[in-house]
Image 1 (spheres, rainbow, N blue to C red):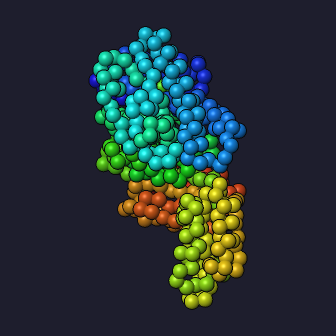
Image 2: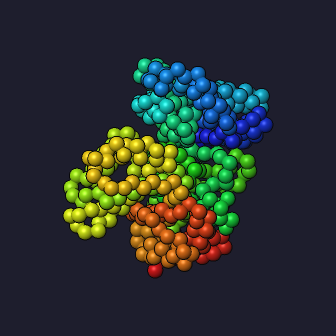
Image 3: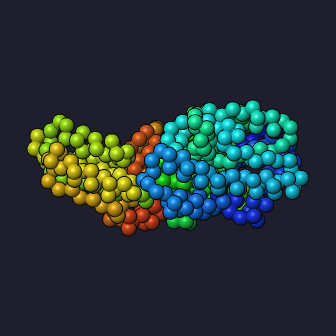
Length: 417
């Protein structure tokens, strides 16, 4: 008998009708002989509603005491959906019980609102499973060292499910969502996008970190670290999903497995800064201290020892804060101009085969050039090539690159050259 953790996202439990469909799916698994634990997100839109209530009620600017209360409120969304799902399973004749994070317990570290899973004691859940009672666990939450509810940040239910699967020694963690699996790119933009049967942890981690929203980045990293096999599939049909597996489980590696994009990008150019040691550190130090993540970076010098231009990207949501910090440090840095641009998008080509095949960059730049799309910034890793372009060209670039790399449905895969 397989031990399987099944996680259902907000759209899967959006209302009582969908919760009933989820319960039927869990019942089929139990009837087939699987040992099952369930993790549920809040009903679609519920977390946003609760966050709005917190903001309306807050008297201050988010001090630690207030964040404790914030977590207490927003964690209620998952408690509602798990209770409703357990009730529905019981109505179907499946013994079930709902569990909050602190009842398991899921021990956490770090700040409220963005806590990290420290340890999970699986004894009580395993006893429930052995007794034939399906545990339905609230995702997104745990308990801190002071006994207070702590939430894991948006998308944290994926992390809860993977952490639970690791603690239980589960054979697999199934992530049910509103898509059929992991696609070569966003099928809403590229009609010929293909669903992948398998993808490696490394590729999925890059896809998630570069903007693909199928899985939360922390959950993929945790699954890779603990060797938890993942399956991404739809809760709205019975089609096969996508397995996320170790690299060694993939027989033949694609050069490029998929394309991801991120809309939450903005570009900052620090113009005519002195080209001497310490200046670049002075640019990035205030951003680091403010917790602003810097991604793509390029530096150009007109002449060594004179002036340089430094261009980089930050999340679009942090742009105003980043600009204010750099303007405050203008005298220390010594730059002449500061240019900020929100109208950009990052597109990334990702694939394990990039480790051993050439031609990926040439195909990227040639394809974009043929469509008069200028590349502003470039960054690379062992299995990723990212470019920053004008946001107006997103759809054109994504479709063209998808075809150029042979990712379109019913076409031979790109082989590199």
